[in-house]
Image 1 (cartoon, helix red, strand yellow):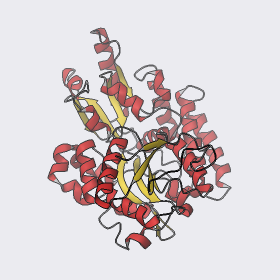
Image 2: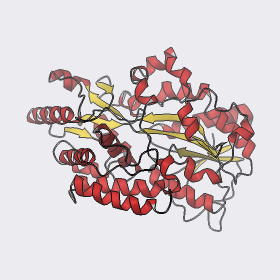
Image 3: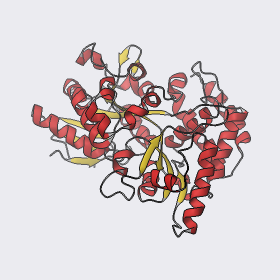
Image 4: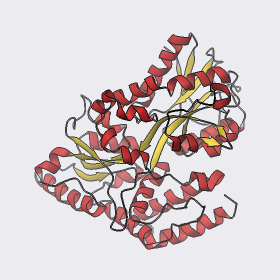
Length: 422
């Protein structure tokens, strides 16, 4: 079994004085540790090791995508080869492209054949395939089937219905003795996860996508303000104040322990909620996210890819590892064992995959039509744009300002960023 080490901060790079001992492995790969990510990565890497005879070190990086990006940027800017294969967010190819190899040069022009075309296009920068799709994501709504059936209500189609159902069930269950139950949990910390949630609220209210495909700023409108105000009304009422610091795992912990009626999360939470040690196993349903009165359901496009650092000493070997981990067999295994959405279209018709994760079939359109964050339109400035958005949304959730003031100020801040030419 390969050894693992942790890079917790970009302040000290491996291989520098006082850092970790020199590595004996031929390759290193960064893997996330949200849900079953790390375990699945370990298993996939071990299978490749057994097949090829090569060794791999697994680097466990911060789970917060915001912190992980900062770490990557510091390592790559130093032209460090400490990490050969990087797990990168779907919004990062444009930001990191100059530090990544063209995988088509190593793996061939058909390297990404069969993967979702939209993700392949997302990962192609200046005609260079800088990352291979590994798993895709879109926000979904988890709900307690048993509680909705008990109270004779159907899953909500609108955010107002979700609010009303959450208020009703929370009050009734607390009166019956379940004083820990909350109506709705989501990712409310000021980080990239809140950008995803807030984009879903705004887009599903007909408030646009923050910045449109042409780079025009669209956030300052009444529908966007209404969406943020509605979300703020949940805090302390149907959503615990602690949610203001929740990431994916904190929200999952509350829901999986039986203490929430609804949860917004990514598909990975399905297999964990259905596990033997879950308090809600067999009691969970999944549907598309609700919408506002002036919009349609909107799920933010998520997902992660694998890329090879330009500074790797073994780029061809690293590319081979990427091809293996993103291949059909590995993607199918990850889908069945832990509900990670494949990026290969053929697996959405695979009977074994659909038996393990039924909503991969029923919510297929949700995954293929997810709303992209404006990383393509804003280029190198996406990090600043996202930070401005999630801080503005967090300010509304914490009652520092209302939705109208927040979107107006955000419009001004984004205009200043835009002048830097995105």
